[in-house]
Length: 315
Ligand code: GDP
Ligand code: CA
Image 1 (spheres, rainbow, N blue to C red):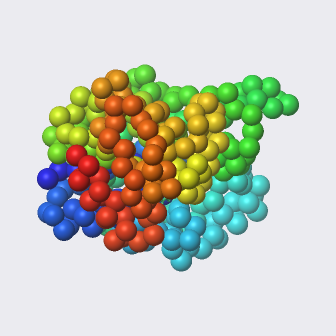
Image 2: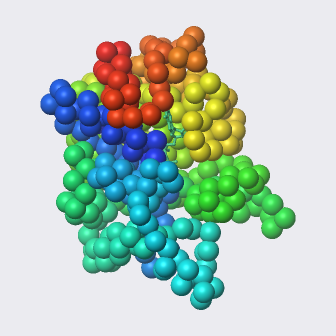
């Protein structure tokens, strides 16, 4: 059995722990297609927050409390940069994390595509899952915002980390999406999958930029395999993070049904055959989609693997 998972950072990473546990049980192969819309260059370093969240989490090196970055992290470089007044000061870069970005940046500057760099970094972390960036090309999520300084587009990280999504926002733009190509192996993985899962990741700024890579949405929509999504919204609120603010920008109701309808059912030109919602959201209706209510809190690997089993049984 071959399973493909579309994933963002923290929610995607936690879900992948369960997918990997399930896959080990049944002898399946897992490929994760990960969002790169959050990626940025800072201080000459190429940073891939979502790929790193997934890699560190699956590799056992993530900080479980903070949710991002490395466990046992120190912040000497950050303090030194601040002492120079080097901007931006709102983005946290830990010392251990910086080593990852140094290796990655050296390889990128040497001409290696992000997919090859990701594979190289994974030889250390052994995530047990094939990690593919959605694209090797530049695809950056920007938010079109408005304040006293007028209307302007800012990088997603500035919107999320600096402004905490607390600024009037007109829309999101995926810069570079028109000309981006799926990374090598992405379309092949989706085309030969037995099951495609949409992780309980942020639908607006994690999954949408993955689907914005030309050909990727069509590959999922046309996939011969069933496509099952997992709701990141439980009882009308995100479990963690600010997906509610992101959905509001799109005018989409922050509910399991709202996100399900945003993805849409395959009979209506959408993506999903199945949609898992939390028990609190039993009764949610998404036209053309089989909806099932199961426990959706990823408290540990076993609970998350049970979610994956429910997704398989739905198909
Ligand atoms: P990010 O890129 O680091 O923001 O992470 P993702 O986009 O992959 O995941 C963020 C989403 O994960 C949020 O919208 C959360 O609501 C969702 N999430 C986090 N923990 C859980 C959980 O235990 N269960 C479910 N269903 N969703 C969760
Ligand atoms: Ca992210």
